[in-house]
Every structure is written in structure tokens, then in C-alpha cells.
Image (cartoon, rainbow, N blue to C red; front, side, top):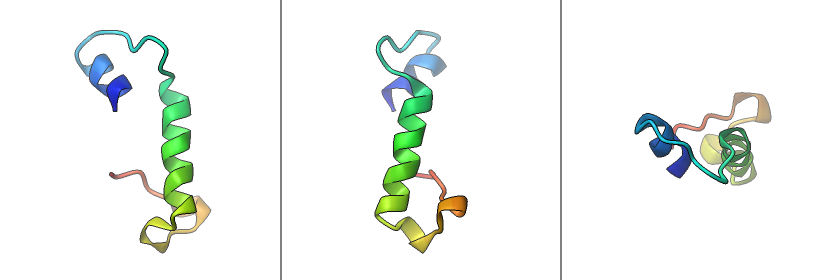
Length: 46
């Protein structure tokens, strides 16, 4: 993720909201039934 890379490198990810990105990642995993996990147990390990 570009936002994470920027934070690790000490910069600021302009125009990228990490919370929004994580929620979208979480939702995508749930939508595609990643590892057949329920909503309360979805992981974002990719």
C-alpha cells in the first residue's frame, strides 16, 4: 500500500487516508469470501 510505504519511509501519504484504505481492503476480502471468513473474522493479511 502506498500509504503504508510513505509512513514507513517517514513521509506523508498526501491524498491517501489509511483508515479508508483498510476498510476497503477489509470489505473486499469479505465480498470475495477470502478464506470463506465471516464478517467478524475477516483478515487483511494480503
